Image (cartoon, rainbow over all chains, first blue to last red; front, top):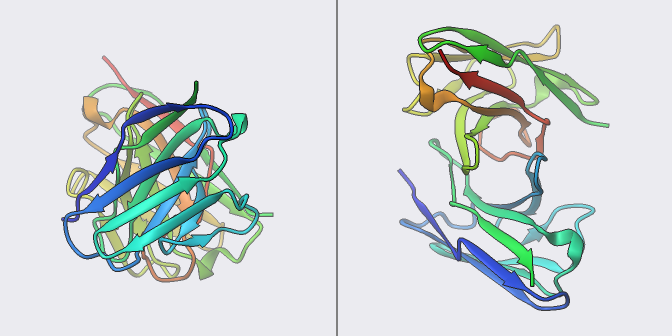
Length: 107
Length: 121
């Protein structure tokens, strides 16, 4: 089964900062990786698909990159409304797996 | 507008059973695979089961295989999850999710708001 190691588990940054989260797979998953945002008490929301494609309607300050086993998620200018937990997730063949999540807070 | 509305959650004793439902609207239900994903209190996300648009293909996580059963009624635009032999570790919010095509891929494009299953004696 494919395991995803996401880091850090939490971070605190100031408004306007650039925030970077990494996700590493234990085998090649090509670009079959999505990133989701989950705000407290809410359902997850797809932000980035196929590692680097921005979902329709998602602000352009969110971006993703990588392929194979190493992936990066970036918020280029952190906003107060971005407070949430972010998850990477691999898809393609089951079992589908998620990273452990990164909780982003405002400093 | 795509809408997914889960129901059927509640308090169940260990060893008990429950059937969750997810009513879909705003898209051609039979054209899309659907999945269930759960989240234990304060924990991360865990894929549970997926079913193809036709219902002819299903997959489940090892942790639930043999106890949980996913199904769908395309005439009612509804997805189901039959949960049997409930364990403490099954306590979670259960989300249904719409995929991007008829084949199951684990690509969770849109999520419902979830229904809480509580396991307690």
